[in-house]
Amino acid sequence: MNDEAAIHAQGLTKRFGTLVAVDNVDLTVRKREVYGFLGPNGSGKSTTIRMLCGLMRPSAGEIDVLGYKIPRDAEALKRRIGYMTQRFTLYEDLTVGENLDFLAAVHELSRAAARTRIGELLERFWLADRRNQLAGTLSGGQKQRLALAGTVLHKPDLLFLDEPTSAVDPQSRREFWESLFELADMGTTLLVSSHYMDEAERCTRLAILDHGRVVADGTPRDLMANLPGRTLLVETAEPRQAQRSLQGLQGVIAMAQIGTSLRVLAKAGADFEQQVAERLKSAGVAAQVHPIAPNLEDVFVVATSNNKEPRDAAA
Amino acid sequence: MQLRRLGSIIVKELRQLRRDRLTFAMIIGIPTMQLVLFGYAINLDVRHLEGAVLDQANTARSRELVANLAATDVVKPRLVLHSPEQVDAALRSGEISAAVVIPPDFETRLERRDRPAAQIVVDGSEQVIQAAARQLAAFPIYDVTGWTGRPAGIEVVNFYNPQRRAAVNTVPGLVGVILTMTMVLFTAIALVRERERGNLEMLIATPVSPWELTIGKVLPFVGIGLVQVTIVLALGDLLFDVPLRGSLLELYASALVFIVASLSLGVFLSTLATSQFQAMQMAFSRSCRRSCCRGSCSRTPACRCPRNTWRRSCRSRISCA
Image (cartoon, rainbow over all chains, first blue to last red; front, side, top):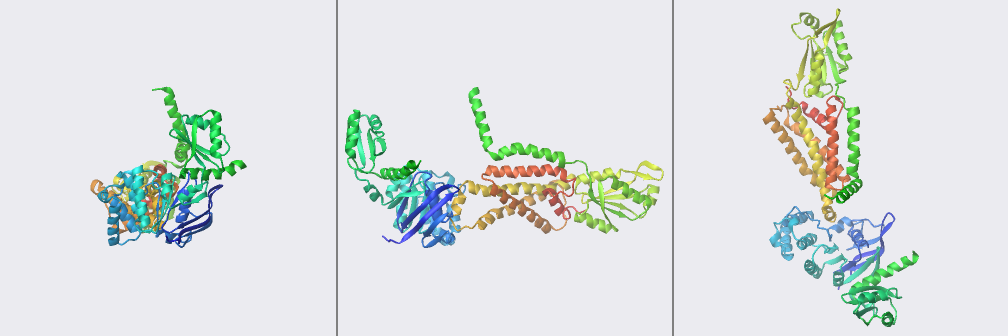
């Protein structure tokens, strides 16, 4: 992998009045990476992306994208990047072909180049038979593919995708991600924000954002590997009761019922398995406790809970 | 029909209404505005028409007549002219709306009563001014014996619309009204739609510059505006026989200026409105204010409402008899 950075941001901050939407974010995205932004709504994902694209001025911080200083060189950067939002932002009252023709002209593609490029994209994104259909009448998944086709029309080196799959069904999401990996294979760097764990897990690297801060970053595997022995599965006939009896136990970060079992996430520390077992026993709940492999959701919960603690303590 | 359900809908409606600041402002604003306008500004009496006097007789009685006409306050004789050509020029430039012309043989005419003793020359492109002049012409003459009771024998000469046909007045005026209404509305909506539908979010990430976007969106409407002008003029000619004399090119040039001004206003409104509906409300409340002032502006020649401005600009080109 080429280790050269596509995006490098330092101390990135955005304030709206008294609200700090993005708080001192440091970020490095290497070329050809599929970099994920994971975070709840309002965690600053969109704001960060908009600043990196040069669509919004940061309140503080340095941004370097593909060698351009942002916001100073934002206009030049626009020719090298693609930006796609959750909302369908092409023209619903134009046909698929007309939308792409328009974008090709906007990006100053020659007529001949536009024709071949559009034909190629329509094939690649399974839209060739929809060419003369109004964009507004496409299905959610088709719209998303059209938007992606429009975003990569000018062969950008870097793609910003802001929750691109929020509005589409799981099948379309899978197809969409196939397309993203295809783009990555061809050398495009991607920065994708999402609040879907399964999508985040597909990224080569990801950052978890919470309250405008990066609370964790790394490869999904490393992030999960950092939580040894902290996730327990409690198998019991009475998961609700088990959950009630474990409430308030020192060191429990989160509990979630998964079917008939209970998943418990604990703070770092030894012997937690035993503590849980004893607590359940004394509460009279028959249960089997054993450690399981953490998943990305656990990483997410731990990362965002760490951030909350100092705040709660201060409050 | 269940009262509790009905009530809950009413409460919900009022809550939404209270939060929609524009509609709320219109609920309060429109009656207030209309009341103030109708109460103070709209005056159905014709007063203080910009006028001129050409007194070629210059006798005691001719001066008396001029003074009497001036005393009515209908015409304000602002200019004293010395030749009929000056009267023509002043009317054409829009400097005056009416002129009192007294011929050199005024005294003779007055005695013989076979011909009109004097003339009121009016800008006939405005019907209200015409009507006022006709009333003024019925003014009784005052001579040594006191009020004679008989009309002074004043003739009204209508410039620009000698047959007093309404269409000659309304059709050119309509061009102005239609252009302001549609042009402002179209541009405001077209620009706001781009934002409302999120297209703008996509465009700002492309190399499109704000100027390219604005001009590109507005230019088609310039063409559409010219098409509208053509439709009104052609229909006016076909259906109402409104003559079109003079330079067509100049007419379209002045239409173009008018269209561009209306479009700029539309662009401005689009920066204030957040939704297409709001843009529509703004454009309408604007033109509503306009049409309500229009009722009065024909009587107040100083008013520069679009219809009058437009009418002035094309008067010398349309229907110069």
